[in-house]
Length: 280
Image (cartoon, rainbow, N blue to C red; front, side, top):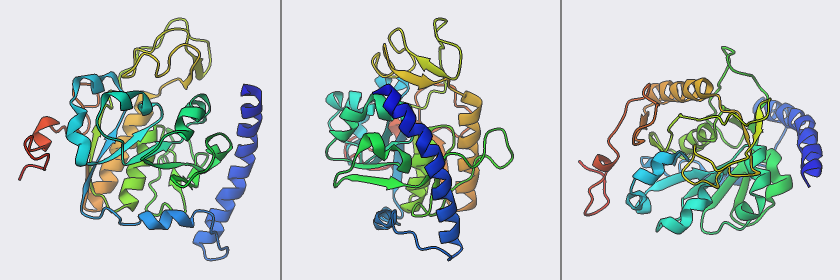
């Protein structure tokens, strides 16, 4: 199965070049692209509201996520491992990395009650249903540390840009939905790379995962990319700068962690704990 997925993934690189050309021509009014028109329903759907973009760091285990029950939330990758422990389902669920998409395809296909928005080139393993939507995800436009990395999309119908972390995808989608007040939680930016990992940028775990909220997140046999913390932080700072220029803010409400370059907010103080409403 992994060989088949590898072939499909490499084929998708070629197809993505075609998709990029279509997106460029469409933006120039020279080509009519309708594949991603379903995304139009989300434009400004949450205008004036706030959102919590949930990372998957171990700090989540030190946070009361029940506060998020009536909030707009974006989750990703293997957050489904947390669903038995909380009393809500995330509003939106994003995946852009082929490795967790392939390794968790069954669980992701079976997710109910959330709106799933995935990268277009993952359809081969994530399938389609009424709650699954795809955006053109431009993952090949530029590489860090180029001065052109990252870019920020304001129109998710046309494309969403890669930023080295799935949270960057979520930020762009939230912006398209009209959200300007965003809080990162569970974004620890603190990774312990096992000495036993194979050389290269893809790691196949041989032990329990210490870097995420659950030991099975990237547990034994799961594949993950070698984390590039400096690239992730660069993307978050760029997003914060872009939001500030456009009437918004990106805050870090993670409990602990190493993302200190963003303005921090105290997670509990964002809520009226009696009514789960934002404090005045």
